[in-house]
Length: 522
Ligand code: SGN
Ligand code: CA
Image 1 (cartoon, rainbow, N blue to C red):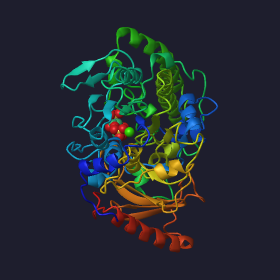
Image 2: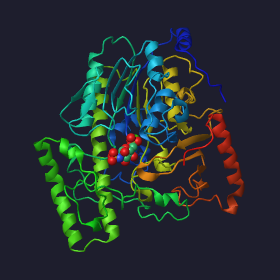
Image 3: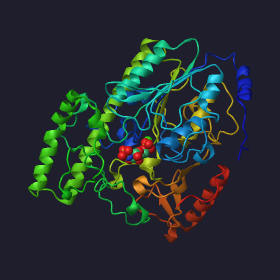
């Protein structure tokens, strides 16, 4: 284990001056969305929606750059994922362990290191680290989760301003404005353009309200999972399509449907309430007849329990993908701007999302679990002058690797206390995995009241995944080759006794390596 110490920015700067004669340092444009599942990115290749829905602009980035196929989050939830990106450290070491944490903005971060070495830095859009951003030359962020419609943005002077329109379009407008008007265009930039979409409550833009009309999107095979063969905590969560959607917030009803519809009470669609009367009219025009048809079918006794779940799944997945449509279009718009300005060649463009998401697999929405759907993160990187187009690196990477990578891109040495590793050796070598690269990743989720997913932590190798659940004091072990959908824990299977012992040992070694203190909350 590398010694945890605080290397000063001055030391990092000294390292930079040694390499200052090298070619112009690249701009870094980090486009980060919220909850974008790999299954909803065509370039990732296994989207069940591919016949009906594509992400052409994100896919083009992947064609022109590197798409990391084994990319994982350290803690599958918004704030912790973001804190790991900025610090290069696991949650317990950057202090942001769950969404009730507050980010300590006095700690070293990538924007501070790059800023002090001569980069101009900005963050625009979703932030979600509770305390105001620090270390950026410019910032303009959504309060908390932010809003889809007519969103507010916190300004650097502490005031809040409201902007009319759709949040994804507005974040891109502001991103382009900053590029257009920044002070010293000779300086390289680090720009974080961070979207709300496709986070809950999945409100589409007006222009996408009718997308998928008359189409049924494919269901995942495990939509009706019975959770047998795995920890009982899988049944105790509250993130099920069948039972845990609010009729107002998630399903867009204006009044409670009959109880038979199994929808939760208590959260209105606050986004609808933010809309102008004209926006509301478009919204009602699209959803009104769809709701009525559902209510009529329900009243006529035409819908079984499973039919109702399938209906909710369609409502959910269509809205989710509609929000991604706007996101993808805006990424196209931003790429066109880089082309027009002649910035594309020397700008590293990254597309990623704070974690992936369940799109009905195991009957779920949301994330948090160490299962593949929420453990993964999209990670696509384009750097025309340096990275061979179309490569598909297989190295196991995590979001703690981003900050070290940006350090090296900027010609700086990686601070000793960053726990991730720079991806530069992979990028420079046509995507090949270096011999000394890690062969396991570590994951740690502390458990929160919302959605009732229990605390767990674990390790994933290329083939196996082990995690420990303190609440029930049990292990789970999955063989990702034999059981890629993770439907049967084999920790009790005698055929896996040896693997189980090895994986437990690896789990303890990895915890030690990352200096994870004993005892997770239950
Ligand atoms: C909100 C959502 C949850 C979601 C968390 C975390 N509920 O609490 O569904 O898991 O955010 O999301 S909502 O009723 O407010 O929509 S995260 O992106 O911040 O991690
Ligand atoms: Ca998120």
